[in-house]
Structure formats: structure tokens, C-alpha cells
Amino acid sequence: MHEHSLMQNLLTRIHQLAAAENRVPIAVTIQLGALAHISASHFREHFEQETTGTTLQGTRLEIQELADIYHPQAQDIVLKSLTFETADDH
Image (cartoon, rainbow, N blue to C red; front, top):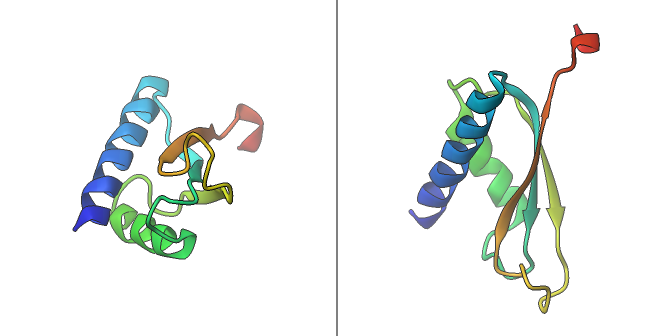
């Protein structure tokens, strides 16, 4: 249940940022803290499940894992960036 609400908050933020750009991202980069209480594979599974049937379905998910438990964001899941298609990508 915790993962679901966490993912919903993240996806809401992604949708807000994408709407501000008036574009759909082709990639999302997440920083996963060493103490974030979710593995990269479990995070990926939830992301794919929650984006199925949405405009984010098929979006590439890049996960940067922090190993340092003393890092200031060791407990956090941080949206690092969204990548959008460029005009040259068409």
C-alpha cells in the first residue's frame, strides 16, 4: 500500500511537469536512496504497473541507486529528470 501511494505521488508530479512542458516524457530518471525501503527492481515493477494504460506507458525508467547510507537523501526517492523527445527525434 505504501508503494502505491508513493508511486501515485511521483506520477502526479511527473504528469504536472509534463503538462507544463506540453509534452510526454520518453524517459524518467529517479534517484533511489540506499535506505528508501524499496529495491530498484520492485520500484520498476510498480512504475510499470502504475503507468500501464496511461500516457506514461512505455516511458523508459532510469534508476540511479545511492549506496551511501549517510548520504543526505539516503531515505528518499528523488525525481532527478524528465527527458522529452526533441524535434530531431521525429
